[in-house]
Image 1: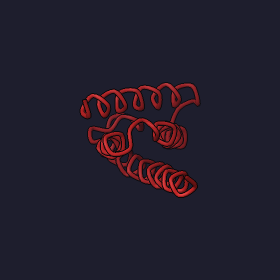
Image 2 (image 1 turned 45 degrees about the vertical axis):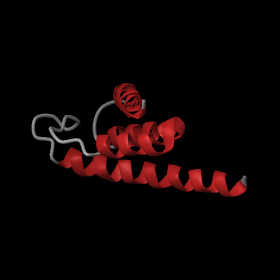
Image 3 (image 1 turned 90 degrees about the horizontal axis):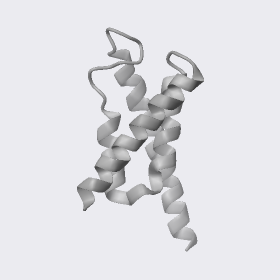
Image 4 (image 1 turned 90 degrees about the vertical axis):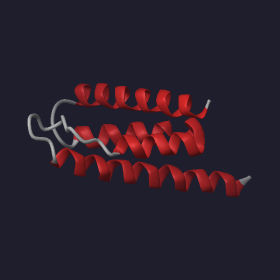
Length: 99
């Protein structure tokens, strides 16, 4: 039982870190607005994570999206709205792909 929890804790941390780094790289490609990028690779990572591990990793995805947007531009409210929208869309798509 402990091994399973440690496994998902490691998956949580690695998913959160990877999402954050991919988001920061994608946001460097933003040309029109600092938080609007044409390419968003973290979506692929989030979809794969949801398909592999189910909805257990949504808090890590949400935290990484919030951190990435909050450290880039805008208020905390705007960043939380963007993070919530990104997480919800990726979770629905990821779970829908598994059905």
